[in-house]
Image (tube, rainbow, N blue to C red; front, top):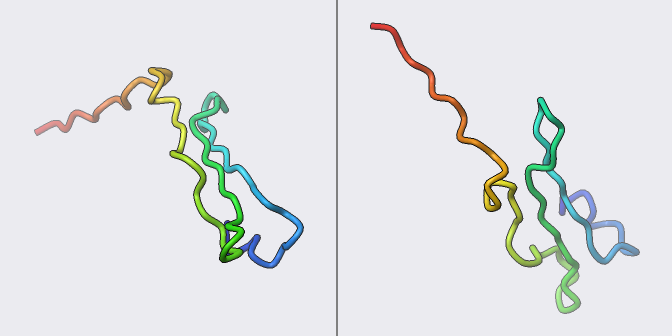
Amino acid sequence: MARLLRAVSEHRWFRLLARERKTEGLAGSVEWVRSPETGLWVQFDDPWTACDYGQHEPAPTMLLAA
């Protein structure tokens, strides 16, 4: 995504959102900002995930029959 936005000079930041397929609930996000020194996109702060707040349950494990 950062490569796609590299040529777009008027933007200073963007946020990526991740959603779950079944519920379409927000699963996580991360923000990117343009470095004033280099002009490259750098990650701003740590990514946020719903797992950090206990909003997800672990995926069920598959049982293999012998």
